Length: 552
Image 1 (spheres, rainbow, N blue to C red):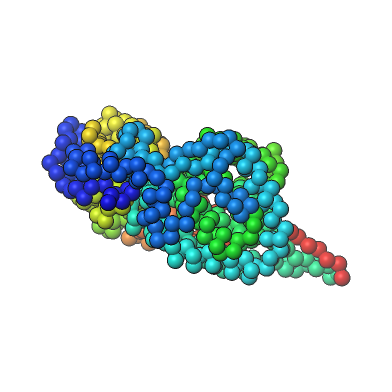
Image 2 (cartoon, rainbow, N blue to C red; image 1 turned 45 degrees about the vertical axis):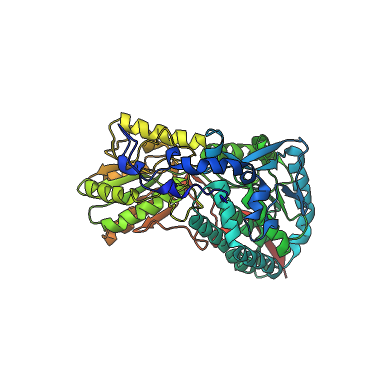
């Protein structure tokens, strides 16, 4: 039987190139084509009805009760919306059996609105006094139990991520474990929410500060990390005593529902966590969360444009806002760098999740003396990729999330080529391709007039620019209104300090592309956001300081 998300065994096999013109033949051999699917597609179509149903997806899990097509309000799963409407959830890798412009529907969720959002807010408001009065150890125990349940169900949770997001199963499993680490971390940090004793200038007064939870917070999460972005916010908020109303991305609500089911099993009390599922009223719900006087804080991960809008909506109620927004990450390779080490880091830092992460490299700046060598070695690595369904064992890279994403990536590549870039590999999908796939692509001879220099691509495109001096490349790297992450490679210790301090970003990887960790503060500068997530600093976004002066 064809598993959900499982394309044919021949999907990733190497075949004669169909590409001409700008398309790299080597990359095309690794790219899924309809011609490779013809032998099994007929049988698959007969199973498509079952494969598209949530019931069929459940049958593939060790614990089918993990998922249901519902929101979660006041400790109950709500499968209908006041609007009477539902919205579809698609699997981005399995749209070979339906209209290629739409994808394959795998679930239908209640399309909630302001009414359900307000219900969740009031339930969280009612639960806040008792939850905030629990001891740090009591809250820690619940988070730890939730963490353990996630690990016990990690295989199922990974499958769910792959179904709705498309990333390879191994990568999805990594996300589940990464997401769980925030519950483990904040379970411990809950017991370390320290105040401060201030030496008083007055002998008859004692001064201290204590930290208290904000209250009810609204969190809005993206589709590219449907599990980890929820846990990173929920863990910190719950640890300090806040209650939460969450709005997951409409592309990937199933992972959120599974997490909430485990939270319920872990003993999270009634009303403490709410989940509003919606598509058509997404903007209205975000606005309502920001403008509600019963919401004390907003945490959002997503685009800079939406983040600015939420910040404006929150102004009238002067609430605390935490924003993790878009990036345009530079990756600098100096002439003294270990080229092989830099190439290996480039592969993971650029192409993880098919380039759909906020800290993905967007601009490669390579010293002119080694640019060609770096480009050739990167091309060799990329042409070994296997693009296809995330459920296939040999798949290294999955699809993009939707048609709009594919079109944006395509337009960035075409723009670069039109302005003089040279194609090393990839560059154009076959016209016979089905699915939201785009071939991993490497371009060189880039210049600052190209869109990739100024816009976040959010796709599997590596564009290589050249430079000659340290001063020049820092000017290039910092010439943007965003500043989330940056990376560079050099063996010169003095240069490492200088460049790390002068890159205008919130996070820097020096001779590494792996910077994410639950113990380190995650966040950006300029228009890449406000505040930090993870680490001990993550608690700051959900707490406020109270100063107490006591006369004796």
